[in-house]
Image 1 (cartoon, one colour):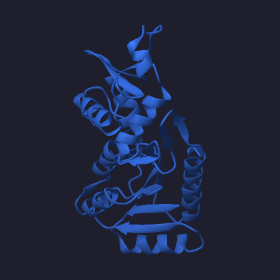
Image 2 (cartoon, rainbow, N blue to C red; image 1 turned 30 degrees about the vertical axis):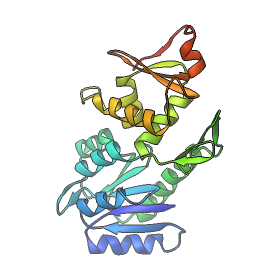
Image 3 (spheres, rainbow, N blue to C red; image 1 turned 90 degrees about the vertical axis):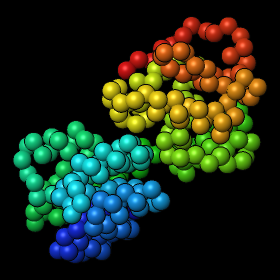
Image 4 (cartoon, rainbow, N blue to C red; image 1 turned 135 degrees about the vertical axis):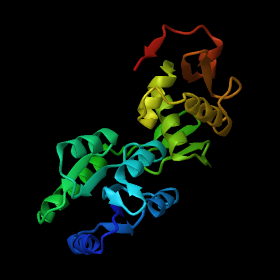
Length: 241
C-alpha cells in the first residue's frame, strides 16, 4: 500500500514517520499542493492523506482536483486541526472519505487508515474481463486488443470499463459524468464527448470493428457489438441519473 501525504508541518511529518515505521506502508510527503498534484500526474497512490491548510492553498483545492483528474475511487482522509462540524461536512461533501482532527490519538488514525485501505483492497477486481478481442485488466488499469496494450489515461480507462460493463445500455452524458468523474451535471458535458471521441480512436470502436459506440443525439451513448448495431435494437434499457 502506497500513501501520498500532503503535509507541511515538520512535527506532523515526524509523527507520521514514527506511526508508519511498524507498518508495511510506503509513503511520500509533499509540502505544497503544487508538488502534490504534480506527483499525482506521474505516480499512482493507493490512499491520500491531506492536511487542510497548506502554504499555497487548502485541502479543498486538492480534493477537487483529485476527484476530477485521478481515479474517483482512491480513498482520501483529511487530517487537520480544524474541528468544526461545518469543516467536517465540507470535506466529506468535497469527496473525502474520512476526517480526523489532529490529537494524541494517532493509533486511532492508523486504524482509520487501515480500514480505508482494507475497503479499497476489497473493492479491487482480481479477474480480467474479456469482451471478444478486448481484455480489461482492472488491477493494472489496462485494456488490450488481441493482446496488444492500448495506452489510456485513468479517466479513459474508467469510462471504457464502465461502457463494456454496461453493453447495450443507453447512458446519458449526465450519468457518465456522475459515475466516472463524480461531478454534477452543471459542468460542461463536452468532457464526456471528448473522452468518447478518444476511446473511439484508441480502441477502434466503429461499425467495422467488433464493438461500436453509437451516439444518441442530445442524450448520450451506447456501446454494443457491431453486429447488433447493424440489426434492430432490442428494447432500450435507459440508465438515468
